[in-house]
Image (cartoon, rainbow, N blue to C red; front, side):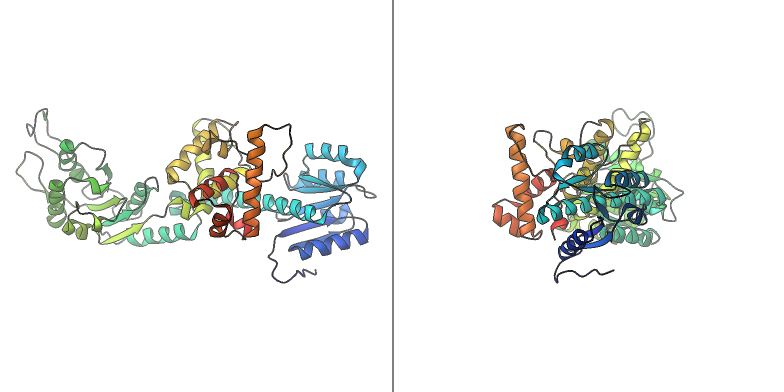
Length: 462
């Protein structure tokens, strides 16, 4: 097969082109190859069907009026084999009503003869993008279904999350203290649980405590326990988290909020392996691995003891924010969709192409915790798209919508216009965000938000 393209063009997708007129087919094939597409030319529907299977990664462009098997029959057979595979129909002027009916039966779009080559290329590009996103989503679903071990606990296929998984497996066996850094909502406790689960201590307790969520007057008792009469209301002896975690792992979340006098007691417990209950005098031996978590660098925190920092900082892990691994967002979303559907005895919703685009372009300031909340709402309310949930007070339109008319409200027409302006700028600057910011005079945060709202993914324009 001849896949010649003009120098500098990047691969844009595979097109199965079906037309019984050899000259029309050859000229269209040549145009599409120059535009960067791989083209498979077929003279009839039977020949085209030989290429159609679940593994076919491209889209179909077919003439409607052909001898033998016409384009509508071909489309029906294609969609029977591979549901939702994009099929673009090429129709004569008098066949527009018929083509609109075909779209109701599953056609992706139709192009009217004589067609504008640029319009054809644009339609095919959007269809190829839809097919790519659908295949990516299927791949992610298969990955979820086949995951085991740490891949089941820490979901993601991005290079940064794969590296984190490897670091966890390595550190788990070392049995050293660890500091985990990460923004709110990135999953620091999940990482700590994984360190425990894959360590020699896994049969003992994993004991989490949030140092920032417990009143200062109670945290000492929570950590070290107390004897009867240690303070007003202490009517019976209580085992503290340190003692309960002996032989296992103690996870101290938000350790930067720990009061100074408790930092001293924690340091002694780590150095000597002994604690004393509040109100008691007998030393109690403990064998605990401490995993601490913080949002900011403890070494730069003036309120955190330097000697305690070095005692904890034998090793450290950095959890990347979700915005640095946006390719993982659809996979995580599918995971929480499935969990929510199962817990409410519902069938899991399928993500649309626009939903996937929004997930991949949104910046996720609340990280995985925010994504989980959105997934729960999406699973329970089938009327809402991902963009509807993320941008409840704004008009949301698809990035594929480029035409406006007077039958639509002013807000919708404005949104369509804005989406098209941003899309054109991304195309002109090949996805270079800095140049788009300068061209549109927008701050990065505003541009990121608008791209997410309209499902515009930077990598589609690179």
